[in-house]
Amino acid sequence: MTAIRAAAVLVVGAILGLVIHASGLTARRGPAQATPAQLRVQLEARGHPAALGQAVPWVLLRDAQDRPVRHALPADGRPVVIWFWSCLCRCVRDCEERIVSLLERYPAERVHFFAVASNPDDSTHDIHKLRMAMGSPYVVFRDVEGATARHLGVDASASVAVLDGEGRVRYRGAIDNDLYEPTFSYIDAALEAILAGTPMKHTSAPSYGCRFPLPARAPR
Image (cartoon, rainbow, N blue to C red; front, side, top):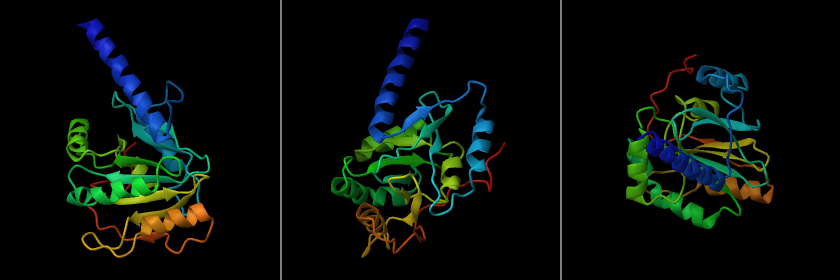
């Protein structure tokens, strides 16, 4: 049984490595003695939340063994879109077709994209089950007690944070102006401005998603 468990861990680790590579993230565990609480302190020490225009070089996400791991965000000239996700939010499901369409308009050659489940009530099993049911073509990572959402200034699912090619926060909020009958896409406007090097007309917008049940600050 021990050998089987070890083999399973290796397989999961290999799959996670491919997934992380595909999303543009780089896992950096850092010093072995760093505890989850110390990692959260490091994250919050950089600014809480990050200001618009502030660079965010890494985020704190969970690995396949449910351990907090620092993931370096890409800063290779391509914008980064982080889609804040939750199994428990109907808005996420209602927006799925729009997100898939976004990925078709902005493929990986132009934009990095991944999702983060910041609701602490979302289990790994439930995340995988819903992703498979929806056929989501993107990666969903688990947040660490909402630390990444708070650092990026996002407090609800069905919201995005958009970073420019140098890793600076340029937009955060809803993807568009209405859940049911959108007439304007904030995320398209943000990406087009970043890709064209033109000024941003919208840097934030109220979210229509489900609020995360997060404390004001992550526990130490």
